[in-house]
Image (cartoon, rainbow, N blue to C red; front, side):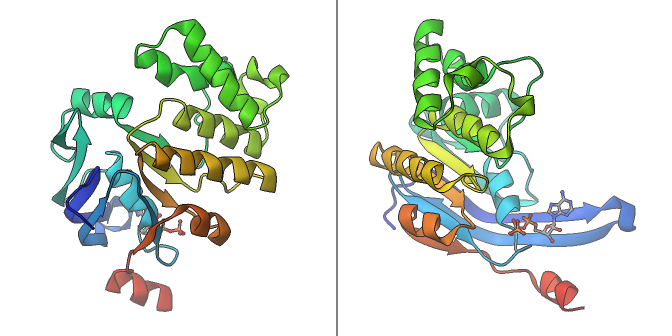
Amino acid sequence: MSGDWALKAEGLAKTFTLHLQGGTRLPVLDGVDFAVAPGECVALAGPSGAGKSTLMRCLYGNYGAEGGRILVRHRGAPADLTAADARLVREVRRETLGHVSQFLRVIPRVPALDIVAEPLLARGMALDEARERARALLLRLNMPPALHSLPPATFSGGEQQRVNLARGFAPGYPVLLLDEPTASLDAANRDVAVALIREAKAAGAAVVGIFHDADVRDRVSDRLFAIEPRPQEASRSAA
Ligand SMILES: Nc1ncnc2c1ncn2[C@@H]1O[C@H](COP(=O)(O)OP(=O)(O)OP(=O)(O)O)[C@@H](O)[C@H]1O
């Protein structure tokens, strides 16, 4: 890959300490070097338990790292997420780094439309315009208008995932992390999700994803990044 990157990890190490297991240490990532370029989609690969979700959470700044650093190109300059204070992390997430998690974090009493519009308002968009963009994305994801004004707490898994997708794709983030974005979707909505990912790439977004659906993975990703299970993991699962 060229030197042009939007997000990268250098020598990233992450170990979990299991306090309820007498402080057992579980090394998951060790010396991970990873980069994704603008307009590129990299799919994280590796067996169950290898550390795909852990890497994703480190890349979003949810997990701290024992070693290495994570750089994201933010406002034209590298920002080190591993060293950033909470204010900078919030700013990076508002402007640069989007995340579509597998499950929607439901906020009580907030309608689906406003959940989707919220990141747009946070970026300074006017209320009417934000709601209009949110509505258009929800309709594109085949969400019936009657559901737009309801809080998603009672929505089906696939409906909640579509609200999550609309929220993640609405702002047009330069970097997008997608954790199983199509796991609960039917074929028609999977196609919409694939189209949204391709459009984001065409607009220059760097995309990192975990896609267990091989068909979706093949349709959106430019290359795989394989995470090898750590030796402890191999011996643990073989036991
Ligand atoms: N918060 C945590 N505390 C302790 N151990 C954890 C934690 N999160 C993950 N692990 C462990 O780290 C290892 C990697 O987990 P991770 O969820 O990253 O794997 P994965 O590759 O995403 O797996 P899958 O494909 O099954 O989702 C596993 O052995 C898991 O048990």
